[in-house]
Length: 379
Image 1 (cartoon, helix red, strand yellow):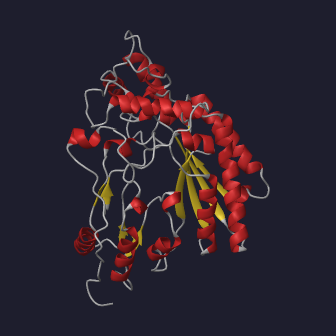
Image 2 (cartoon, rainbow, N blue to C red):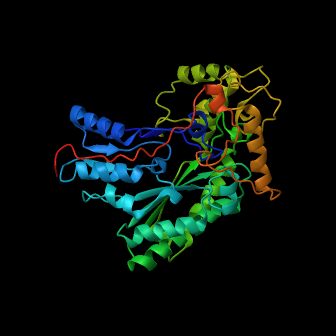
Image 3 (tube, rainbow, N blue to C red):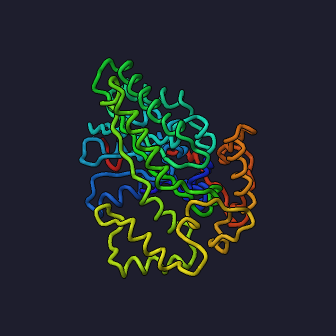
């Protein structure tokens, strides 16, 4: 159940947040009616409240309590997907686990170091994260999952190794506040792929070898720690599938030839690791791009300039290209320490002139409505 569309947090890597602007919330009564209709007509018993940042809904507390009251004592369970560290609160979490199901909590700091999080405009501090997980662990949760990316623009080995230090601090704090040793933290790492219509659309993608080496160092750092290593789960994707994703994300019409070559060579179901062949994609790229003057690296691991005509420039998401470029320059300035630029959520600040609202003839639509969601029948 999508409770609102759009996100104006301004994370520079996030295509979905950029192209679905502005924020448009569904009212609490509309959400209640849609959930009821879905439960009655589908037979499903789990309701997930979805959006790019679900806990940012202005009435999420009332939505959660209203739905929990409505389905209290039934087989219908509620869930909230990955929650921003700075939007989490224990009252909300308790409403979603009222029926006795208390699964792990998932948070997405994205960058391992404070510097990296500033570069991507994911304004979550280490203190924010530790305070949030302390609250969760002290209220009975035993498992927390943290999601990060490897290969972000300007990233160094040390930025990635900071992920291990952050995970250790999470485990230490969990043991401290709960008084238990069965605390777990799962670190999940995805490879960063630059996406069109974002400030990072001009960025170079990290090559396979460097990606795999950084992940190897991180894995060894976690495993070498006798005190915390066993409590930290480690999941990651190596660099090869990410390069193919990068090719498909920022490729032009010539990439169609590569896709056909892969298919003719037997490529099927490449999204499944057991069917994926990086060598097949490399070979197909070589054949399809022969004589064009470009190669696989040209599409993936090089940085673009402002003057380059990008394959998606003719597609209009409402975003002003000059605004995206300025935000890309801000990211680079933050990375080298020459500036400290934070783009705040324009739901609550003056307009940043990204171009969407006037270009698309729309506007931000947020509550509160002041209404409560009543049970369908008396509980």
